[in-house]
Length: 84
Image 1 (cartoon, rainbow, N blue to C red):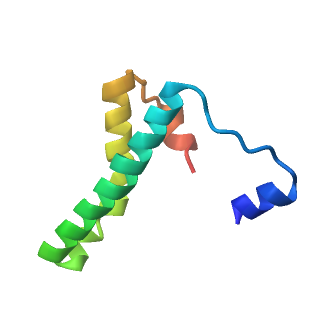
Image 2: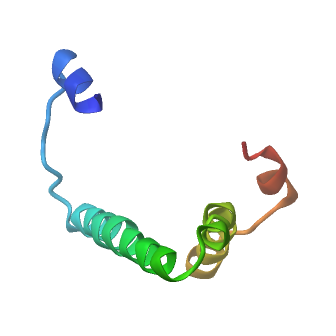
């Protein structure tokens, strides 16, 4: 739908030239989509669905922990209270 809207509005489509952009895209596709979905189905095949269903509830906490670890991001009270 977004691609169709982009075409309808005449937005210019260009491929990124920066290698870091391609690396980020590759990471999102390979790790963020393919590997995570494979692992999700792997776990789902071995555990009851009621246990696996807790995963999406825990994802934000894991993401914040990884962000703190990798980027040194500081978790403040406003960060926790303002997120919607």
